[in-house]
Length: 155
Image 1 (cartoon, rainbow, N blue to C red):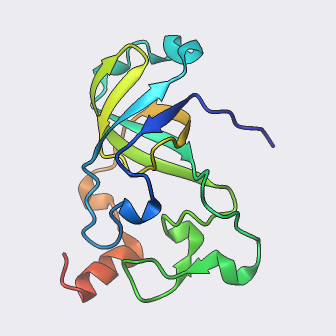
Image 2 (tube, rainbow, N blue to C red):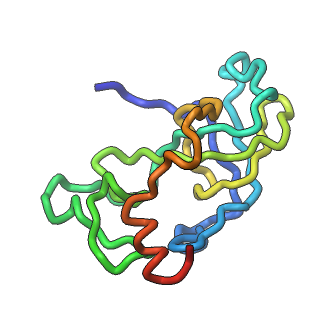
Image 3 (cartoon, rainbow, N blue to C red):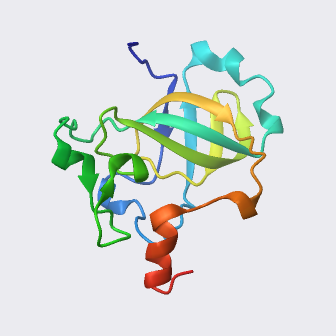
């Protein structure tokens, strides 16, 4: 096990979880700033060359998930059927870790201006990685979400 520590914090327009777009067709287009702590600034060297970043962050305001079998299933807002927590983006997880891909708009020192935040204002950032994918669109599968979209005529 390891103990995580934030490398920075998110500046976001969302103050409450109810404000974050959820469900089928939800679009994450909000602008925000990833404010990196000064001691981690050297780690931002050359980040400007990437169009998108993967942000790993902590669900710091979600209730801790107990490891009971019934809590490992949940019904997401985008479907009326229960799914395993590992097949969803639910904040109720055994380890409260979130993952979001954002578009890097620009860097200003220790501030990364991004588009596509779905985190609450003040969320701790655990890590940032450049988005690199060699998976062609035609090979990607969307699992139960594609089925839910089809049932609701969203796809």
